[in-house]
Every structure is written in structure tokens, then in C-alpha cells.
Length: 90
Image 1 (cartoon, rainbow, N blue to C red):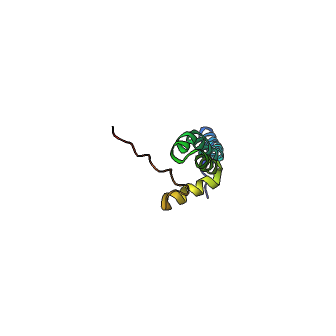
Image 2 (cartoon, helix red, strand yellow):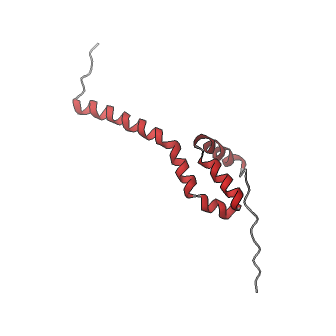
Image 3 (tube, rainbow, N blue to C red):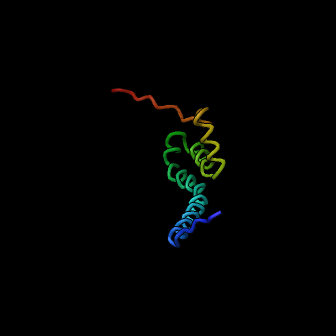
């Protein structure tokens, strides 16, 4: 069997690519946490203070938040939004 000889550039790119992939894969769970922190304000606005903080707290936990959001795509919100206000026309 003949082995293919790759250039040094090719070997470095291959090894470096795997290092980048590994590093990015380690940060993915914390990316969801960052998004949850950014969206705390809209959760509080839509659900109320206590329910909004609880919802954002659950979303900020790396793998628990992912599972919760996956189920909510199919089922709907675990913690429902507060009722919309009725606006009186004067």
C-alpha cells in the first residue's frame, strides 16, 4: 500500500482545523447562556418579573435550557406569558 504524502501546509491546516473545531465545540453551551442573559428583559416584559427570571434562569443552564427549548418548540411555553392588557379607546 502506498501512503499519500501531504505537504507540511496541508498537515498544519488539518491539525489546526481540528483545534479550532474542538475549541468552538467547548464554547457552544455557553453561547446559549449568553443569549439567555441578553433576553432577560424581554422575558420579564412578557411573563412578569418572577416568571421571567425563572424562565431566563432555566434557559441559562447549558444543557437544561437546550432541552427545555427543544420541548417548547413542539409543546409550547412551560411558563405562559401574562395576559395582554386591554387598551381603552377614549
